[in-house]
Image (cartoon, rainbow, N blue to C red; front, side, top):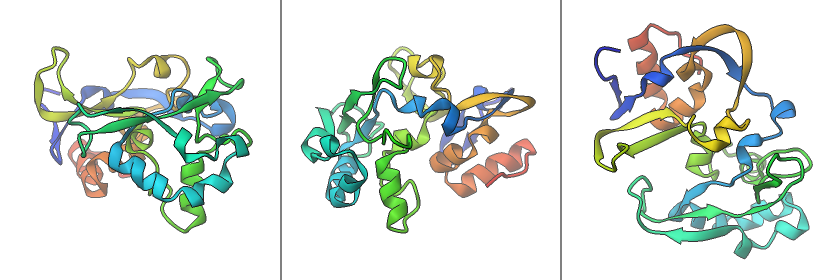
Length: 211
């Protein structure tokens, strides 16, 4: 790109425009590798999850049902989170993962998120309660440059320098056809930009919307 591509207040990183021979991963193969480290959660969103604990608890193994064990490490120093405060989901032992840990909300029997399952069980969209950065991954929004200076626009990019991504948690698998990465991760792009923002991005790059 010769000029920065700005859509809905986000700069779209060139990584997402590149064509690569990959497609979305399949849960039966990746075994939810992206969930093994837990995720940072806006404090207000964590409180909303706790307010729906009675929906989530029955979908977890008995030893994971205590809501007081679900979140750890409260911080208050990141403008990327709407409330300015954030916490992390706890991790628990998981022999199915390479580093032997996983997010406390990942169900061992089917490798699905109990928060997402709870939303679906109550006729809500799957991402209604799920942490934003969990839903957005493997994309991430960046608000500062490498030197810690604020960016003029938040940048939407691929989180491919994360050890989690490089060690099997890329949410993709090889395929024969090359497509722009923003199309591989269309749902995540639409989450960040909004559905109309995603369609605007498609229009500006001459691509047919996938969602």
